[in-house]
Amino acid sequence: MQGITELFPVSSLGHSVLIPALFGWNKVVTQQSASESAFLAFLVGLHVATAIALIVYFRKEWARIVKAFFHTLSTRRVQTPDERMAWLLIVGTIPVGVTGLLLEHVLRVLFAKPLAASVFLIVNGLILFGGERLRRRSEVRALAVEHGGQGKEPARKLETLGYREAAIVGVFQTFALLAGISRSGITMVGGLLRGLDHEDAARFSFLLATPVILAAGVYKLPDLAGPLGNGIRGQVLAGSLAAGISAYFSVRFLMRWFETRTLTPFAIYCVSAGTLAALYFGLIR
Image 1 (cartoon, rainbow, N blue to C red):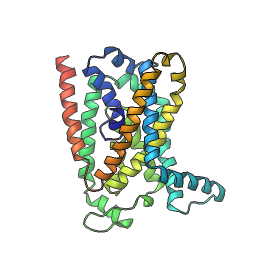
Image 2 (cartoon, one colour):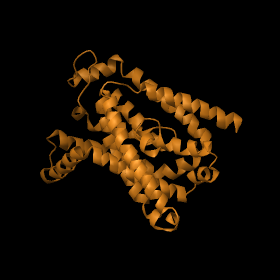
Image 3 (tube, rainbow, N blue to C red):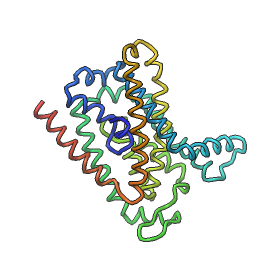
Image 4 (cartoon, rainbow, N blue to C red):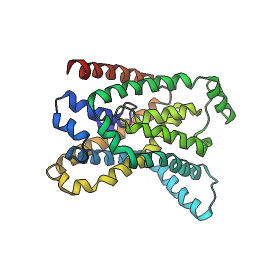
């Protein structure tokens, strides 16, 4: 579930709240909004495995980007597309990094509840629907043409994205701290609204997510070495292997999907699943 929902634009955090609640795993549900718990320590391992899968899939691009970054430090100039991409990713990561350090725990305590996650999953679907609709507006088309886009559906190249635009997409990513809002979905929408096509929007979204997911996991990795990891390290290993393998095949599938397809099917799923879950947790339970 983690490996798929972290990359599919349907919110892994939302599903990590809703699925245990649907199965009646009440202790797991309670541990979601605790300051520390064995389940949160378990999720750390899954996030690290997901980030590693992304690094493996984009390994050639990451090798060029990292090399380009260090080259800019020595030359103090940004000249190539890879050098520009390195700094776009840094600029785009800053907003969610700062917000996560300051508010991640507060938002988790407040909103990592089944009913809240259901509502935000509906909101996520509406955001995906809205992104698909707004990307067709004349202003977005004009922006794409301004940066070299051509044809019936003009789209700009990823390397033409500005630092301010990368920061805006990074701000979009901060909303994924709410259970039910998808990191990949909302950053893809941000990219689409700046004139990117679906493939480049997905690529930037996955590259942008990798350091955030990895840093969040590594930051809390000591939890697994401490008392919170006692008795669950075997489960963490099994879960991480499953998360890593499923994440690799998920990103492989999605990069092919977005060559010709849109976010609409995922929007339909989010609104439908969120509505059913909201009715269940709000009225039945």
